[in-house]
Length: 150
Picture (cartoon, helix red, strand yellow):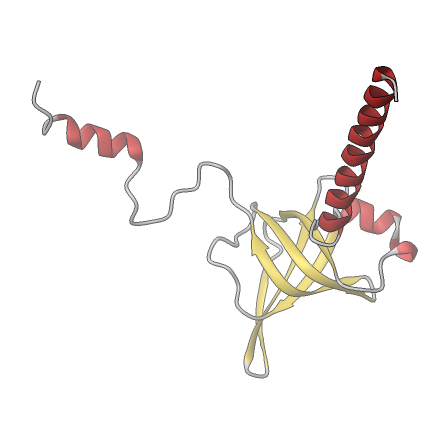
């Protein structure tokens, strides 16, 4: 076998291996990647919605949150928006501490009669979130300045 034949075979094997690896990675992550729909996307594609649970996300509309008790469970009803459309969401269960009006939320559940019935509620926060009880790094550095000898 000539030298250029060997090189051609090695290049073909390398390219094939790359495409097989890329396809395998995309296929493996396909079930684990979770996207969410916005209210305007849901309204546009109401008939084409998946028959299984899916996620919807948006901002909680100010003044729309209504708490109630259904049996032994606390329930909440609110509107979410993507600034184009609004969608009513109902959820019974534990409401995350970061959930509030004007903040982002992602709900997992299904549609029923124009209302999204959530099974899980996730409150989103911005990148500047700092849990209570944790001192900000800038304040910590200021307090340590007097302790460091010069």
